[in-house]
Length: 286
Image (cartoon, rainbow, N blue to C red):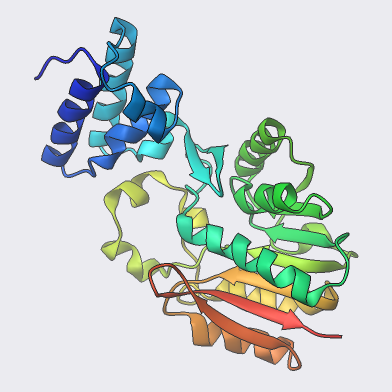
């Protein structure tokens, strides 16, 4: 094994070690940012800095942990989402860049649909709280409620809300059950949507570490969209907006669920940064 003293040498060793173990070399930079408590540009500015013995040992330990298969975000305990750092652990899915587009798409539509800012939003299946917290911080006038079926996930989401100083009302329960008797202007959800038979095509890192309850769903991954489409008419004000992240093959089927439930709504299937259908927006008019 190569010995290293400064940041640059450590990154060179880690990148090579990770590639040899079939991992992405970019994880080396993520771990180094964590070790130094800085940003990407901060690491670049300190390439010649000598690491302490403690920093070297911790860096090596985390790189080896990731090489063994644990997602790097769980190794360092955080992931960036919409410009903020979120705590993540095995109780929650690691937030993905595609989900940032759901937040952005919602914000872009709000001013066109609503003529006021004091709106009520629900995030169903909040996980780490990334969507709910980002929406609250980007649009402070919103009242935000977030639900999840997992007590552990809600505990992680609450930690994130406290750390990021976001006022979000977290509730335990299945889909819309914790929202009973209330009406909302905006409902967002990134539910589990992977069909069980797709597991064989997935990365072992994801399968062995991320919570299966947040990944997989019955009816070829469509069951929660069907249930949401059936349940949400009782919860929506007019006008209203529903935004959902979807699997890239599910657009037409999910759109049909919502067209059946909201016949007068404008429903669009939107592509992500990679050009894949990734979001459904359902605009409910007065």
